[in-house]
Length: 227
Image (tube, rainbow, N blue to C red; front, side, top):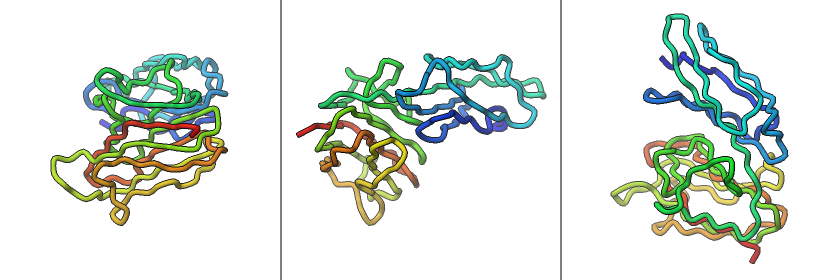
């Protein structure tokens, strides 16, 4: 069943490789992140389909909105896919991301300052990391000095963190420096509140679940400030 769809999807100038997720119930998903210099109305992309598959209708270059496409297989079955190219737009300072039931973590083309790739869309009161390879990005357009955030494990019991999760900074969205790493030796604190100094060159901050064993993580209360 998983062979019914895309084997790869590449976008020129993307900030990270596409996340391709096969979903049994509902449309399967492709998510790509690009910067605000990219012409979202004229995306240059290439893709490969799995064997025996074809598109019912070709994708267009205009990704100002997500595109839905049907993949047909030569056995007569079909599968719907949603292709979403997210443009990460830099925010002014201070940047405050406080998600809740009244401020949902749902991304659309009007969002400024953040975007997630592979984030669990069913959990909208936080940023939920439910698998490896998932990342959450923040972009700012002015020098900042402080980063605050809250990271918590999703568990009813008092357990130890068993994966690898990193926080990184970048001046260009391409080259990254490690700011904080969480693993079995560097546990997530009970309250999950963290503050870091960041340099004036930083324009991007990224949280990534590098390796997951069993625990989901929640990210919230992100503050990027100049003082």
